[in-house]
Every structure is written in C-alpha cells, then in structure tokens.
Amino acid sequence: MITRRSFLGSAAAAGGLAASGVWTTVASADEPTPKPASAEPGTHTLPPLPYAYDALAPAISEGILRLHHDKHHAGYVKGLNAAELAFADARAKGDAAAIANIERALAFHGSGHINHTIYWENMKPGGAKEPTGPLADQIKADFGSIEGLKSQLLAASATVEGNGWGALVWSPMLKRLYTLAVLNHQNSYMVGAITLLITDVWEHAYYLDYQNRRGDYLSAWWGLVNWDDVAARFAAAR
Ligand code: MN
Image (cartoon, rainbow, N blue to C red; front, side):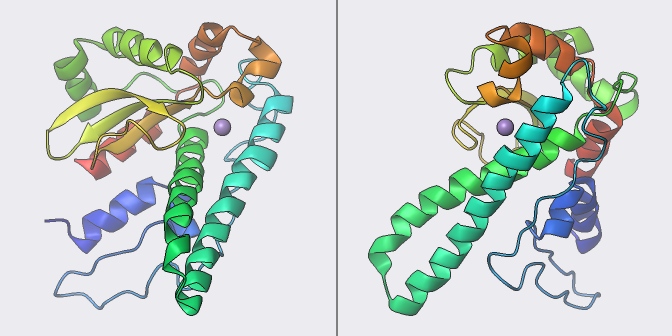
C-alpha cells in the first residue's frame, strides 16, 4: 500500500512532474487530504532544462537541445493541454463521439511530456559515477552487471523501429528491472512499470549531430547518464 509519504517521495524523484501537476497525491488516514495537484485543465507548462543548452556538448549539441526542448517537448505540453481542454469541452457539449480521438491525443502527448521530462533529468553534464547500493545490486541481479544492462538497453534502443524510446523500468508487481523498446511515446510499455532511465531515439534527438548513426548517439548518451537521478527514482519506486 502506497503511503502519502512514499508517494510524495516518488513524485519528488520525478522532479518537474510534481510541479507540472502530472501526478496527483493520495492521503493516508492520519494526514489531511491534499488539494488536487492540477485543478485547472490545460495548464501544464514546459519545465526548464536542468542545465544550460550547451552543457551536454559535444555528446548532444546546443542546437539539438534548443530544438528538442523548446520546440518538440513544448509541442507535447501544448498537445496535452489541448487534450485536457477538449475533454472538458466534449463533456460540456455531451459529445461522447469526440472522446476516442481525444484519448489517443492524451496518451501520445501526455506520454511525450512525461518521457521528455524524465529524459532531461536522467542526464547531467559529464554524467555521474556508476551506481552503487541497492540500484547496483538490482542491476547485477537482473542483468548480470552494469555492462550487461548497457548492452541490453542500447540494443533495445538501437532497434526501436521508427519513433520511440529505450527505457529501463522497475515493475513493482514483478519485482524486476526490465528494458523496454517503446514505440512512439506510449506503446509497448509494460503496465504499471515505473521509468527509471530513458533515452530518446526519435530522429530529432540526434539527427543533426549524428545523422543515421544512432549507435554513436547512444554510446555518447550513456556517458551523460545521471546515475544519482536513476538511483533516486529506484529508491522511490521500490
Ligand atoms: Mn524527443
């Protein structure tokens, strides 16, 4: 049973998500009921990058980060807000026929906003030291070693067909770490799995710098991973 404290912990680990109202909170019996996290539909905002636009170069150039964050990520926030407002409009009009299309837009843009937010926070200039402690123990149990995780995650990411993401996730139900090759922003995810580490393999994430050399981009991305952020997400998710 998730407590308010642990849930707020996971929301805090999700960083900008809590501030942007993606998550709602659940109260336990001994604490006051919190207000809904996002009272007004359509008010999500683009979280700022947690570092300067040129801070990840040369692995990821300033030009890519400006385009990717300011245009692409902003577009998903805009699409998420539009979907929320469209739900409200459809309810007001009693337009049940509109709901199916809005659901598709919600899944696409909402997942795009969430994935990009985690992706930015998963990186830091120069990367971080490889994990120690519980995350390292779980990686060893489920992948053999950090090198085992790297080879499996990069292979999953390299083979995503078309647009998508490579992700390391924790399943609270199955008590294992998995890698996922995610199509678009939302398909081929495992139900209930919590994203710990994610890399964007849409062409807009690397094509200006690497053209079709997705593997070179992934190798450079690995060197940017902020393992402290991944460990914090794992601690909150377990
Ligand atoms: Mn992207």
